[in-house]
Image 1 (cartoon, helix red, strand yellow):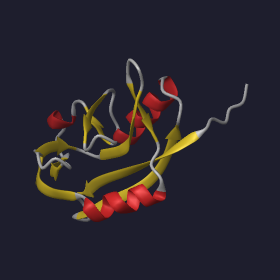
Image 2 (spheres, rainbow, N blue to C red; image 1 turned 60 degrees about the vertical axis):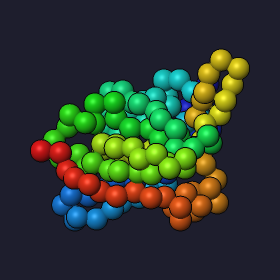
Image 3 (spheres, helix red, strand yellow; image 1 turned 180 degrees about the vertical axis):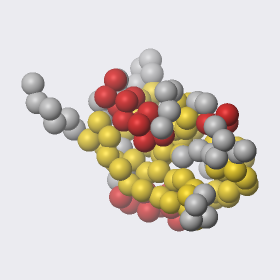
Image 4 (cartoon, rainbow, N blue to C red; image 1 turned 30 degrees about the vertical axis):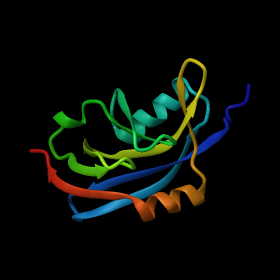
Length: 130
């Protein structure tokens, strides 16, 4: 069995409260759904569980499911593609939605998709949790 697994590209947005500036990264995580992918997301988000919401039909937002309760987390307002505003807490991960017969899985983003997302993203820091 190989220790190497196929990887997918994700995009993250966070706010560094010490430097008072946005931070964005392109990272790679295991492409296969399951424990390896979940563990990688939990490590990136520094959490035990995640919530997934749609940014658009094609793009998912993944956040810490307990982010609202963690002091020091940034509070973001993000406008999704259909115009609705979401309030999200902590680091945000962007990945692709892949619709299957009985589930929705996550897949990677191309560099072109990340660039398009960066140019169209409407996100504002509206606070920091105390």
